Length: 176
Image (cartoon, rainbow, N blue to C red):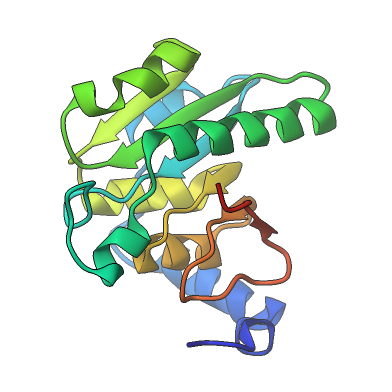
């Protein structure tokens, strides 16, 4: 377990890592939906861990990493309240990155409408990762994949507690 992340992941180190990540060949590419949603909206990337972790998983490791859609929706609502309070009621566009079928996320789409929520399911992992790194706001999953994207991001990070500890600049989501 990492316990002193701010020492290891200090601003100079993170800036160097971002520079190296962005300069690596081939050039990084965002998804078309992510690029198109820019406008005046705040782009919020939401990573929802599925695939290897689902509601029927057995064992502490897998159950400990599962976040229900109900929890994700509560996190999205919390983040939207923060955005509205800080950005003069600016709209948020939510980009969901996960695996599975669209029906598994229908409750999230109903809550925000198809004009404000975009599903990126089972897509190119490199494009999904770069979208998360590039987002204005990133809601992490309990995942090392999320953690790596958060380290490279210059956006606002909302962290779900798990064995990788948060940086002091990240906002810790409540346990629901």
